[in-house]
Image (cartoon, rainbow, N blue to C red; front, side, top):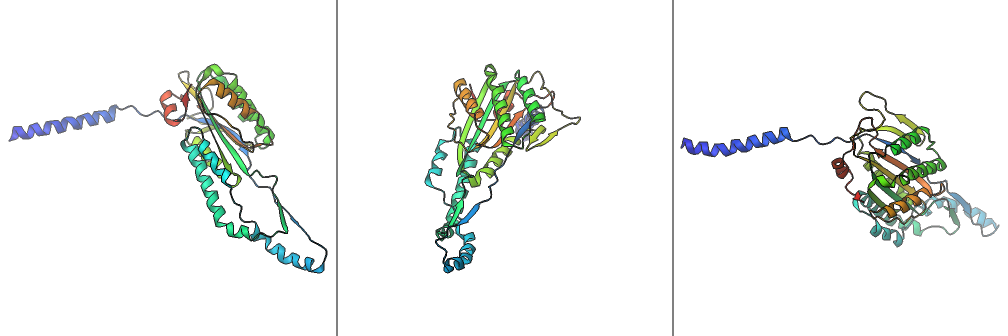
Length: 322
């Protein structure tokens, strides 16, 4: 009986020892690298211009102005979203969280439009609202590229842009976008991975969708050592990590360009140099009038940090090898 118990106990102990050794010997996962950020923009809706369409100068018309104006507030609370807004959802490139977030924003706007449809149907014919300054829809583009670590010149350029650019105006943001795309275009021999995703959302949900995508990408950074957003410049200076060149053993640099534009850009999502070149040229050609918001995020940015292939694949699963 004792021998039988020992025989049963031996496999249990052996398995326990194997599990313990595997826990201690398993290498620690690669920690995320620090990064940098440049951007800005405004989704604020301009003040609506309200005018009254008078039908004549009769006394009853003037008397009726007060009641007509009081009803104005409830007349235009709604705003239906037409069927064409649903169509771009089938054209998102690459899928992933980018397309899902845009889909959720469109669904939210459509639900709100149904809730307010009764108010919209009671609108007065005498009230005219001028909204020509607002686009009916906004195009969101996320361009990501993985470069060989020897592209440190691009890191330096981005760091200099962050320290010297005025990111509080659309014209200066357009210069940041142009300089960033030019830096990448000049190093095609260093392109290794890429991903391009586009989508169109109603103006009402564009800011929240843009911010959610931005938070998703920024969460991949251990810290933002260099930041210039909407005119606020911050640089991390501590003992743990400072902005500077990555370690010589660093394998990759990843750059994300997130754009909100009034212009609908038809970018293809194919992993080849020709498509990347065309996409960068189109992004760089967006005018300041069409550019609503911009965010450029890159990693690594910390002095002596690395971004290895296994970390790149885990954090950026939608990247495609060229």
